[in-house]
Image 1 (cartoon, rainbow, N blue to C red):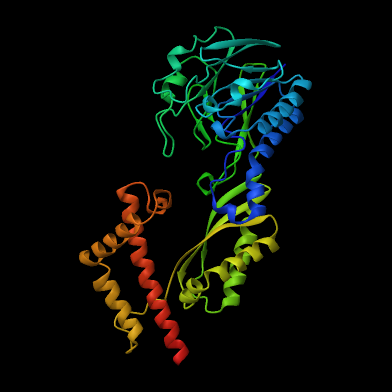
Image 2 (image 1 turned 90 degrees about the vertical axis):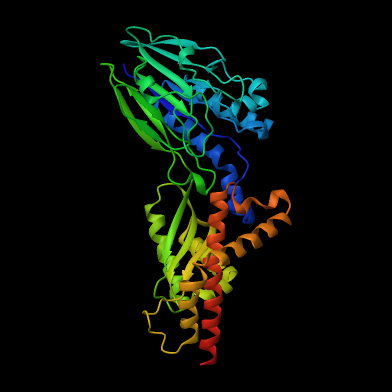
Length: 422
């Protein structure tokens, strides 16, 4: 008889909204409830597949923001699993260690929350003995590897380890309980159920080591489909791995090339067709898109001037497509380039050549812009300075963006005025 379980991590129940969805109440409601709905989908999957266990490898909660309403919701979902005789094995991650309800919530007896010392649970699964071992974060920080604290793999059994770890490190994630993938493969455990890094990764090797990623993204930086892992331990001891979609709302960055478009109606139709195409490619229930319009078009200035109207147009097209939302609209458009030396006496074209060949490359001009932005930042409160980035590289990137977009705004406005006169 096979032993089956679902492996998930980093659910971050009721995580505070971190995107611009706050400007749209309906989108805010969708994203605000998405982590709960993802957990409901996970529980539904466990019931439909009649698994033996659900493994949660840390960060079920989202720190001290979690309320007792979340606790009641979670208890209800755990009770559904309990009534179906499905065990839950959970470790606390760094966010769980901050959660007030972690110590207060009473869960059904079928839910095993591992302590800060390595513990193991032995299960009889037909032809096999399955040993599940886990270790929780007692504090939000874990600067040293936890692997030496785990007990050796039990000989003759199917050994499953649960660990919340940053492995060797990952962009956007602080270092927690660091260890190498090679060490996990060499540990003797058949399956490592990991958590902490929000991107799904199957670390190939002698054993099965999987970071499932989070089951629901929370903002544009957690884009793409999100899922959990369904694992079957076959009668011969081999493992079958399946990825199952769980995300309710899927964030996506979408480039829309508007090169050559000269009419506003054509622009709107092009946005509409792009959204329809992306919707058909999206497996999650909802698509939350950040649109970036790119390319060379005579409409460049009109688009910049009427940004609010363009956003409203995109949102209307998204609503018409169905279950599509616009999280943000970005412009990276410019006037069409003229062949070198082909200004034909057009003063705007001549000015553009001067700006791009002499002004923008000038170190003195760049330094003036840099000083101007620095002065502006000094006049702003600390909480309003986030747009400038957290390091010199990010700040320099902002300066480059302002120089490029500023010159395009000026040229587009001049070109629009010139067209109106003619």
